[in-house]
Length: 614
Image (cartoon, rainbow, N blue to C red; front, side, top):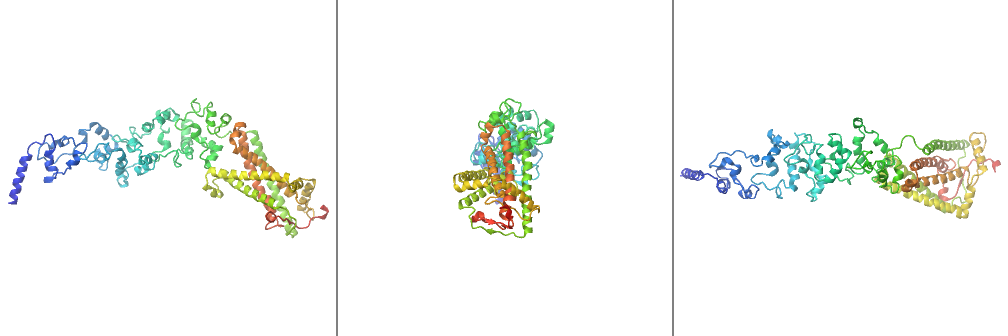
């Protein structure tokens, strides 16, 4: 009975469905497919009616379903309606891969969604709605397993894009920021090796220029833009400098075009011997820049100092022979004057990169002077102290006694303490500025270049203020004037030097009785400190007030000031170590310490002097 009822129902249904389904709506199709009866594919006609295809009849796509019942339908091809898009797509990388039978390649439905539920690209729910594109592309391209068999330059491109300036802007709500299809295309997507690709090196400026129109216009007129249009593939395009999936804001320290990174980016090409030989470019641009003040300061982390782009420009780089170039001889004054107000005209007379080997006579003389004076002075000091040390060991009387007469008042001891602290701070911070990568400079790596320079200058200010106070103390107080009088060199000092030398040589049995309270050792140290302080203050002031120096002096003056400041610092620090510390610590007569600088009372030395010297 049940079988008979089923057969009757089937016959009735067949008779009803045998009529053509073409009509003004899809009601005939809904009869079976709405509920998925008799094994037919189930279709959500409510969702279909809300799709972009909902206004069409089913048979518009399923032409072989014109009669019912109908056999299994053939797959529907989108190109039947979207002929132009399909033609473009089939020539793309995705379309070519689909044509080769690569199942994982993106077909229409993978991006746009199923045809029964496909939405307009302007619909926020559409997978190809602008805000949803990164997520749609990520379904394939951020799947390592799915992409493993393809030689793609980016392993997880959506993730890396999210870290770029475009990705950050897009996620913050700026939907006009560049996303996948803006750079790679959609139906016309090709790999970077394909000359039709938007990301083919020659097409990159055009692709970027769709958003950055003004920048692209300037770039096209630059030496790089003209070269790339001429087919010179070595010429940099946008991605050569900014990166691809690593594009960051120029303000980001990690960006290849940031002030701290730009020089490395430029020399990637301009230090290449291959490119230099091929295009006749100078190969020493990096070295000659690094040898300048700008280069040295940049190596120490100064992000405000001039880099390649500061002088040559960025997108508007032109040959120095072009009258529009920022480094053309007629424009140099203005270019330099952007940073050095009022000094541009003077600076334009100098050298853009390192000066030639032939230096100014003043530089040569100063270099020769210090290369002779430093070893002679330190050698003489070391020999003097070494002989003094040996004679005292031979004499066997290396102990002294403390005098009850005050040698340094509290005021003088405070001056000494401040002077010592400022000197040590100046020496350390100064040499850190010169040798920022040295192992002993690691504590200062927590500070940037401006902070390190600031610490050095604050120490210099303290040193200068103390110097002015000391001059006033020596001239305006009775004790100071007396000390100044006693510090002046005398003929007796010359005789003491001679007698001390004879004693060291073993030609005298006893050392001379040196002048008190200041002997030739202390006098030479005092006047050397005074002279060295003046030299350091003057040379340092020329460097600190560089704007004034560059406006009123020729270019060799700041170079001379830099040289003198460095060599004088070396001489001062070495002299303190060899001369002063011996008298305070290592002299056997006072070891382990001459406590005068703390207690104010002097420690007299033995053995006894020759009485005839009195």
